[in-house]
View 1: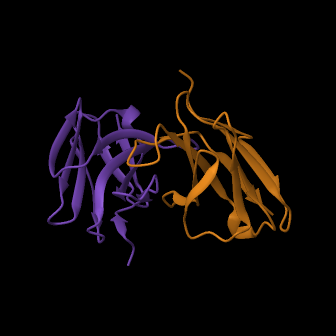
View 2: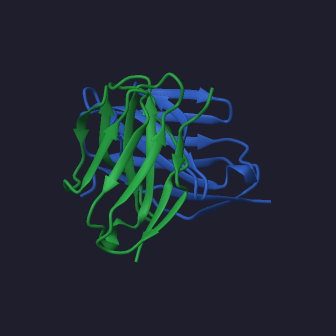
Amino acid sequence: QKEVEQDPGPLSVPEGAIVSLNCTYSNSAFQYFMWYRQYSRKGPELLMYTYSSGNKEDGRFTAQVDKSSKYISLFIRDSQPSDSATYLCAMKWTGGGNKLTFGTGTQLKVEL
Amino acid sequence: ETGVTQSPTHLIKTRGQQVTLRCSSQSGHNTVSWYQQALGQGPQFIFQYYREEENGRGNFPPRFSGLQFPNYSSELNVNALELDDSALYLCASSSGQLNEKLFFGSGTQLSVL
């Protein structure tokens, strides 16, 4: 079993839809949670960073963490074609240096 | 403020050869990490450098090695290339070695034939 599980998609939604992306994890030592966006042939770009259970909002993006269920989500409101990319969840534990454990990524396509 | 830059962007090698990839960290960042991303997978941690010393390593064999220079730039060296080494190699920098946000470069696409 992988430490971090993420549905690879692809996920196709119409413009303006609310998108929900999810990851589950098995290692309860993970304390820091991130979402990265990766365009084709580019490096991952940090979207959201959080370390506590609950919701964190930034513009159209909301990150949600439920440590008791070992489940994290990213919600994208009013999705745009420019949001079409692969979304990677990542996490790390206290004292783990900068070693991130990533999910496999979910490919999202927002269609006009 | 300049971001993380990597060179070259693409590279083709044959099995058994050696390769060196380069990374310049973001201004003000003193910690560099390297990741390998196979097609359709998430990045996998190779190792981390802080103050020119390797201080964390993932599940990669010793033929993967690195250096960090006084200006915090870094190199990844891979010896005895194998076909499975074909991947996107990503460099990430941060302003510290513990629990810091990582910022990635665009990567070097390595193909081993």
